Every structure is written in structure tokens, then in C-alpha cells.
Image (cartoon, rainbow, N blue to C red; front, side, top):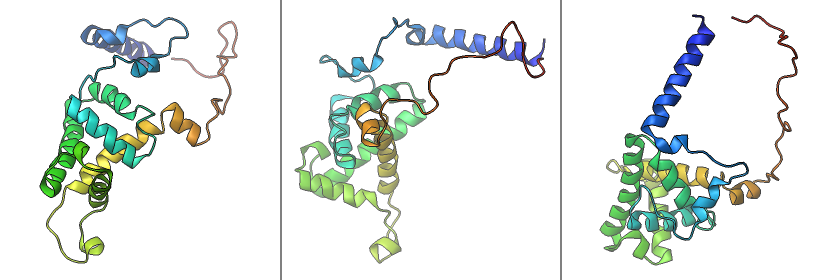
Length: 195
């Protein structure tokens, strides 16, 4: 068995194992099907987040990137996180919980129940590391900045992957290299060695 056959066998075995363990991966989609429309459904329900976490993510994401609410960033991130490793899910949920904890400590209310100016204050507090350079004095270790950076990275990535975000950065829907037409060789001809 050469390397190509070994790779092909390994790949097919892993795909088979993946579709057996996760039947959703084996789902058939009709031609022209747009899976993003499922996120727009009026009866959409989160897969990973609870209702409070979802509302927190909506409010926070719209402060981080105005327009994230309309781009359905929360729904996309819920779907994405539901497929992530358990460790990544824990980090994401811990970061959301930290935001709420900081709000409870400072204002005695969860993030979603704060008025917009207090929500912005909390985001400003978390957005910068608490160091002598930023605060002018030595402060104890503050994990809030890292939690915020984690959430911000996910939110910004989700927003600029959405149709709204892509349009905002100037993508007009065309691909830079055109449509891939396939292999130009005919009748089994090739230009290099084959194993």
C-alpha cells in the first residue's frame, strides 16, 4: 500500500466514523440549499447557550460590533460553539459568565439588565489589561481582559464572516480567482510523478 492509498483509506475511515458519531454530518442538502437560512428561522432555538447566555451575547456583541444583532452573530456563534471541543465551549461560557459576574459585582445586576451606558462602562473596564502601564498602579491579576479578548475575537470573526460584515469590508460576492474549472489534463495525462 502506498502513501496515497493509506491516506485515502484513513480519510474515508475517519469520515465514516464522524458521520456515525454525528449523524448531522451525514445530512444531505439539495442543490442550491442555503443553510444560513436556518439561523434566520423565527422558531430558532440555541443549541448550546441558555436563554440568558444568548441575550447576554446579543447585547455584548452589539456593543463590540454595532450591527452584530442584525447579523445574527449570536446564532452563528451558538451553532459554531455547539460543534467545538468541550474545552473551547467551557472557555466561551466562562467568559460570558465573567462578564455577568463583573456586572453583579459592580452594579448588582446582570449585563442584559443594565442600561446601555453601564454596559458600555463594563466593556471599557474589560477591554484593557489592568497593569501599571494602563492604570498607573500595580493591580492584582485581572482575568477579565483575557475573557473579553476571547469573546471579542469570536464576535468579530462571526460578524465579518456574515453577509453584512463581508459587504461592510467590501466583498461584492465574486471570488478573486474566478470559478475553479477542474483539472486541465485529459486521458489520465499528468505532469509529475505519481505514487
